[in-house]
Image 1: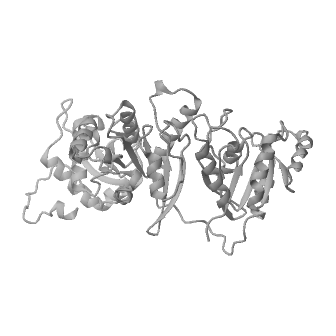
Image 2 (image 1 turned 90 degrees about the horizontal axis):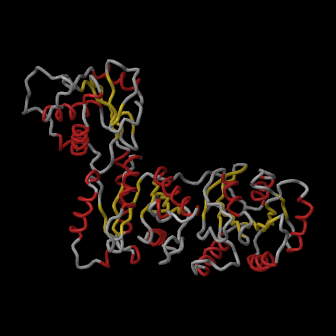
Image 3 (image 1 turned 60 degrees about the vertical axis):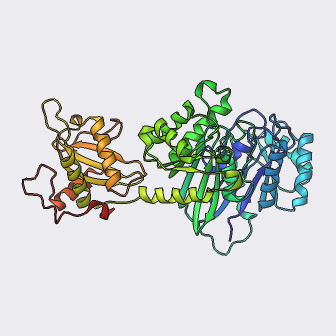
Length: 487
């Protein structure tokens, strides 16, 4: 049985997005006094009294959009009302009922669904009396609430649960198997990609820059897997951000990268790589997220060979030479699902675990092939290596001093790991710890992270009895395992 849905509707600036965030228990939708901020359908899953349901935020009804997107916004509202099992009709308790509220009420009646008039901004009980005017809208249920003052939240949730369709089994919906964040500059086709993936007009697509403002979660079922695609607002240079709406859009795009399993960084091949693209790539690196460079609108570039643009990207992002590149035409649906399959493969890579014995063997081979350079009259040594985490793969090296390993050598080790371990196309988090000073913080390549799972590493070290100090025994090439065969 599908998850029940509850739509939040009303005229602009009555607090629909505030109620949406309030019920969700976290900030999802942008809340601004400017009319018309919300355009697309925003949704999130919540539960109350062991009943799971989805709440949907919508744009304001009955107002002309400043970017001439009124028809698109109205289609999103209509879609939410058709899908909803119950409707929350939000009005302003302070302003009272206005003619636009009557217009909204007339539009809701034909749907014949349970409707609760929610008189928002009733911060104090004294406002409840004036809010009784909402009864003249013709709906029997009216509830005074205040998202700002947290008034009557439980009563609102109780009404929703009481008016949901009966369910034989109240179980949680399936867990998300993969979270995809779609990021990039404005007008690179991110929303078109989402609609092509969902095979429905899930988000507004327009040539107007900045059409998408919030980060929009779209759940997609594919091959028995639940995929959460996160459409984000197009990012601009910070110096070009014109208002607080664009600022919050940027902040949500960054948050979407942090919460994603795989990030799809979109490019428009008709435009050169910009400073914004590089900033997004740096943020992806900082958060150790698997990524795919998605070159959209490739139909506009024919007959240029894909290899030419791929080489351009490789030269522009030399530190991300392991990131796969995909060429698609989202408007026509070309290669859209191949990108999803590739993202699932990257997620699988990031969750792989390598036995400690194999990892130590690979590190030993890397050191034998190229020893770390002497620094401060000391020879850097790696005694032991262990993988302590996944998503991203996290490897701890126990050494005689993290400060003895320079960045070029660490980059060499990371490349060696990608070539000889099942992490060929995902970032690897590398931590260094001083074996003789276990109480010190571990140091990664940027000296920003602390060591993790020290106790586990010690246990594995004792169990393996292994050391990566130079070995005195002779090499036996004939019996040495083939590393590539292991991969």
